[in-house]
Amino acid sequence: IEYMEKNNLVKKSEESGKYLMNTLSQFCHPEGKGLCIGFDIKNPNIEKECLKEGLIVGLLNNRILLFPALDIERKELDKTVQIIKKHY
Image (cartoon, rainbow, N blue to C red; front, side):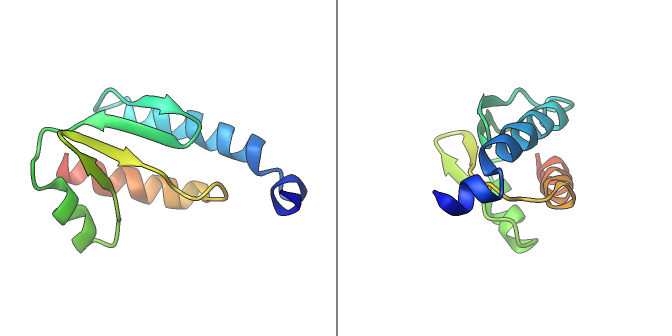
């Protein structure tokens, strides 16, 4: 908890979550809160295709579930979106 407070992770994750939701909404319909985000998929192979590019995503039924680290950087979010969009 001390580390989270010291590094302002609650606020940072809220801001990063809004950014990720806005970016994903350009091509899908994300839902969630903070950095816990899910959305329906069109490509049933998206989990394997993302993994080949180094992105680990959760898959539940026909939904991708994202749970990135609270201290994820903007450039990492952009790369995440780029990979997902490529295989969406």
